[in-house]
Length: 100
Image (cartoon, rainbow, N blue to C red; front, top):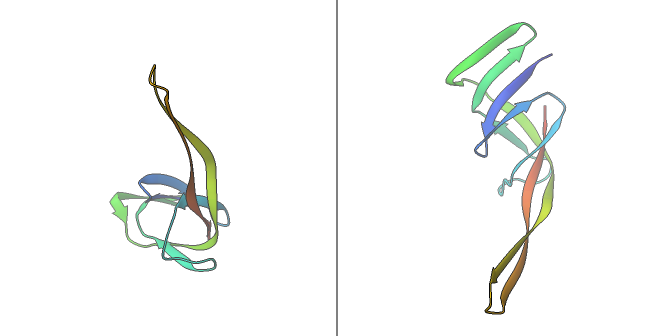
């Protein structure tokens, strides 16, 4: 079993070939485009493991599948005894990528 640990969007992902992942919104891409992840932290192929110090040379290609929205987060602001209430909703936009 081979996998790669990649740093993107300020987080680290364990990536396996053929699976999809949600990363932060990539504004300059459209559905079907390829994006390249080049901050490789660890690469494991069969029984060989390469560890970067801090990163490895190379890149992983991924295809943009779709743009998705995350779950709704409700933000409620109140001030007691002042009849002040504000309710706002937010849905974060993500880019779904599939590893090649």
